[in-house]
Amino acid sequence: MSIESTHCVDINAMLPRDSRAAMRQAVAAPMCDMRGSAILATAAQVKARIAQGAQICNLTVGDFSPQHFHIPAALTARIQQMLAEGQTNYPPADGVPELKSAIVGLYKRELGLDYGSDSVCVGSGARPPIYAAWRLFTRPGDKTLSFLPMWNVGYYAHFCQTDHTFLPTSAEHNFFPTVDQVAQHLPGTRLIVMNTPLNPTGTAIDRDVLQGIAQALVDENRGRQARGDAPCMMIFDQVYWRLTRPGVTHHSPVRLVPECAPYVVHVDAISKWFTGTGLRVGWGVMPPYVQAKMKGLIGHMGAWAPRPEQLAVAWLLDQPTLVRAYLDGLQDQIGARLDKLFSAVQDMRAQGLPVSAIRPQGAIYMSFHVDLIGRGFDTNEQIRTWLLDTVGLAVVPFQAFDMPEDSGWFRMSVGAVGLDELDSALERLRTALRTRQG
Ligand SMILES: Cc1ncc(COP(=O)(O)O)c(C=O)c1O
Image 1: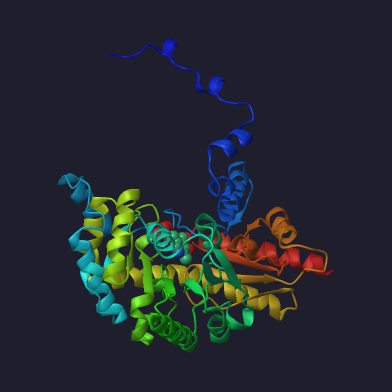
Image 2: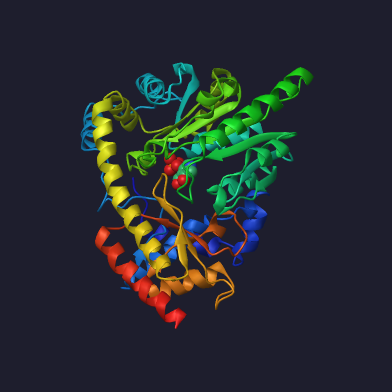
């Protein structure tokens, strides 16, 4: 029996007029103060302008346009096959055994880490393992640590109400902290978050710095173990590790300092290196006794990855030659874009124009500096708006990654642009910068 449409309750008529006040009463603290993603807000503004017909080279989104980037064809075929075979039931809360064992093989082969399947917890992308780790290791008021700029850490610290410290960094150190900075802050800290290759900067941490940080973690935790205190844990977010630029090596802290294995949760996903952000397959790799609790939490959230995708990814990860060929092609596409951006900015700089960049070492990002603060502009936001309106170039200021200063630094992301678009945008940039000089 169906209900006639005339009987439908008009929901809007039933809701309070002041929706903000109603939200603050309905949603408990601290969630009522949760902020939306600043990156997505910028990206949405740009999309709206493009929809209105504006010519904009959109370097804001940390995603891939399917117009330019495709997931592996074999993965598409395998997902379809899994669906056709009826693989549509709940997967186990920590992932299907085939995928867990393929991840074990991947980490052994490519990272030199011999974990067991009971160390792997699969989730719907990298976010659930990240969120779960925050929840498992922290209580409100606990000290947590990361550095600036970094993707999304501020939101997690807010959810969990931790007493968070963001270590300042500089371009000189590729926007990573020094070993001394971290070591000084480790006492009393319950969780440290690391990410390399780093979103938003496109830089990769130096091997010696990572080794020093891992050793400092071990030293700190040795003392705590002797006192019976809880250890400091580390989220090591390596979602871009397979997009490390040729000539740059990615390291795991556990490979560099094996004694830190009890404290490290590696976070990973196919989102970026199979360009399948919408497929939602990610995982954490950690000590088995932590995995058991993460499995529980991800199970309660229902944040598992879809079963057909899990089985298809498991199959593909077990074909290293196929994966290597795909990644080589992908690296060529990403590299062509990043190299074009970097050399054009270098060229402009050589011509005396007020821009510079850090040579990309990984991920799909380049750190781009506009040296116009105090020279006609007071804030990054003013520069961002000028680039958008005058140049038709959309970038994200480092403030979207919790870095408060008006430093003139921006993230450029190449996942959603074609090479021709870049050519014309760079030409417009060159012309606009020249007029500011005149
Ligand atoms: C550093 C970093 N970690 C994790 C994620 C989240 O990945 P996923 O989409 O798999 O949840 C992102 C997404 O942009 C990221 O940049």
